[in-house]
Image (cartoon, rainbow, N blue to C red; front, side, top):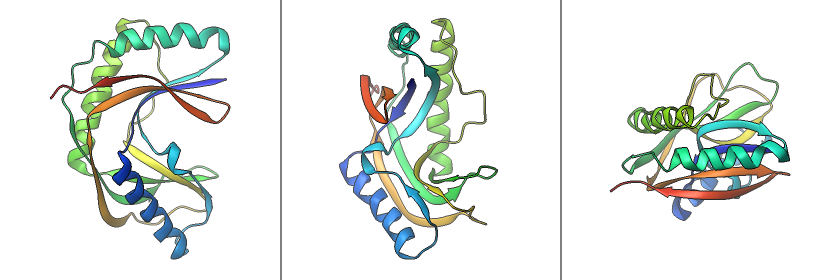
Length: 178
């Protein structure tokens, strides 16, 4: 299966900062679980769904056409707290975007969704959208979010990703307008 999604990737200094946050949580024994490797850190902007080989190629082409219509300015990404998403067996442990950053990512999410709908691409984002970077799948939920030293980078592009056989492959990238 091909898991298709649009994402914003951290730059190298932000990747190192995210790793430091994860290592700090591990060292403090704040959470235990399966930790995500740094090469998979990203903010999902739109999840398209899971597709077999036959349908993935068509969906990728339609999604590429839709993304080419997006007109979004670059913006500051800021991750400022660790939280878990409740109600799941292996709770995703995530770095959440600051409130200001959430609004910027949400605007890109909205515009991309409109372009995808016009291109005839259904997406799997029917759930509530909360921008974040998943750093682990934890053995338990946190009672409250944990403030961390903010992780900063400039979201200067977004990408279409094909996650197949546990490998993330960037299919195409689109620069933000400056």
